[in-house]
Image (cartoon, rainbow, N blue to C red; front, side, top):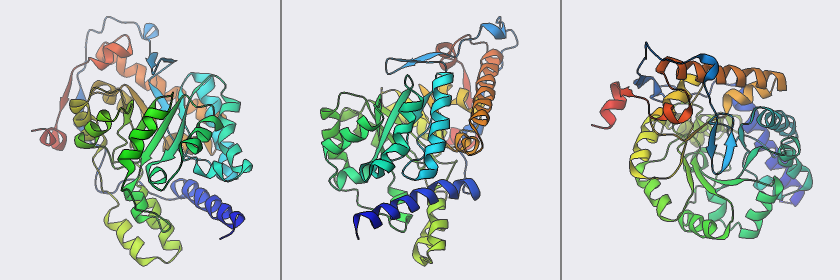
Length: 357
């Protein structure tokens, strides 16, 4: 395969990864995030005025207007430039964080790099997070290449994403994860910015979290199941390629994973690292629940992606509604700031309570 044809294949795969979630139903079918089994306790005497509530927080020495990150989504295709630009402008204006999609494609050409670097151009002061795949590290991505990816957006932190399920189902996938753990450990020692390890929708177990803490990872993003199914996305892509085995596996493992709330609680019990909650979060109530059960920050991808496909104004409007929902929960449980919200009382019910018996 020539370098140009390789670039064309990457662009097409990235475009499909963008369009499939936007135009198809790829959410969890038979499971959920389990956040519906987290009950926050109402306070009938909050002794607060709504206007005095403070959603700001500090994370990795950076001040955020709210504990919210626009999660890693896209790049590597010309269509992503517009979306990343709109998301970055929102992060800049509202004081939120933002993650980029996997950036290996940006090493292939200047044009593809610009689909990511647009984020720093539009958000000079925002907390931006670079992104590489654990599988790429295992395949031999060098420290110098990782640093190029960081420099591409002048990143404040780096995500290493773990996606064994997606690699298994993806028609062009490379389910080769031997050596990933060692490579992450080597990477942590070589970088001067925080390293965040995240799943992409199947969750992090307490055992994996502990191993990551041991090698010096700075933050874990649990990215549990119950939201977008990347097995589902890849199954639909496999259908278009007539790959019957991948279609079969994608259907079988559509709902595979640890539900977001279960992953977050068990990881919180096993490590002392800062945690990001993601995976199927859709509103401010769910953000508040995640903060109460152990998250330091929360991240959302698909809800922002859908709005960014429309306009920047749509993204801003959605984000403002989200922040208002979060403040409303704070008011109703009687917590004036995020620190107090994290200390608020909650009750676990149903399957989530059973998980921890």
